[in-house]
Length: 118
Image (cartoon, rainbow, N blue to C red; front, side):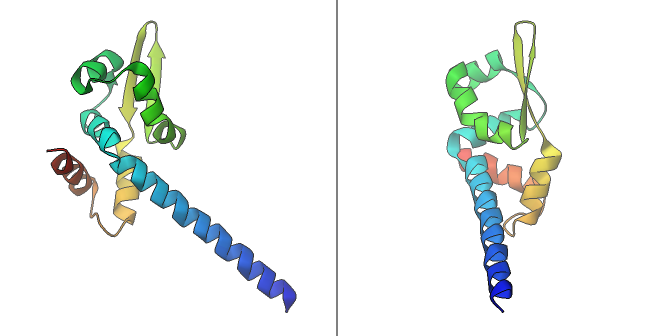
């Protein structure tokens, strides 16, 4: 009997961690600065210089803002020669938004991001 209770407790902790992880991802996606960056990335990769001008953000701030989303694979950073570009994984974003009850698909999710910013 004790083993069943311990196993059940461990199972609940793991699912709470997964829930907390999902919440943290959604918070990061909808954080206003990140949302603005993601809207810029929705149509394809963008150079660091473009994002810095468009959003008025420094390289350090951009890296800090996107660090969690890069870690989780939603955004990738590509450095070639002196050019740095960022790319949004729209398929991964779509899966997260589709799994959340608030969103039907990526278009609805990105529309919500866009309307939030305007």
